[in-house]
Image (cartoon, rainbow, N blue to C red; front, side):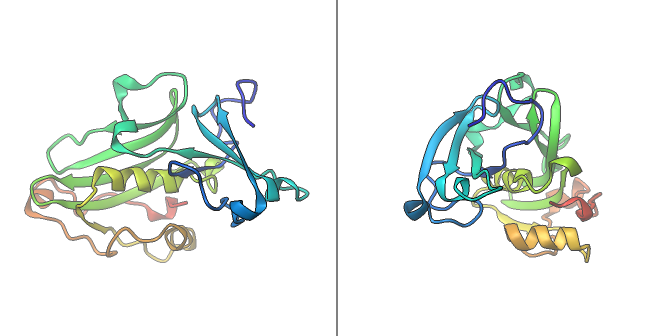
Length: 205
């Protein structure tokens, strides 16, 4: 299990969005069969799990942390400290404009998702996801997308086209599309110039 003695400001231990007791580990094992132990990550300040089936296999650590992406668990810039993995909300400069959610540990930013939410027409557009290359394949992208969707719960979602980049396509195929890959902006999002927006889907991971 992780502890304060481990190196900070890395995603050494993989993460997944969610709460409660998981039914499967990130590597696909049924935990009711393989066995599971719960602990606490002092680095992430989040529940940590050990898949005993993974742990018994050579070269498999089987440890991951669960990150609660509920809106209540997301913080503003003023709520950031040096302790724990935080989902930091940077509001858009104008209503229905593009806002940002960052995944941070202190001042270290592992990745971010850009999104537009119109509270009037209940339209949501996923514009851009970026994770620093050395932190990819650790679950950061999944957590960011889930955090964005939590903020736009019950909204009508669409997203910018992912293009043909194999990395972008692979990520979207694993995580799943949040909506049609053709943005459907409302009038307020058009006025906020959400579309077209800068979006480099090659950064998906």
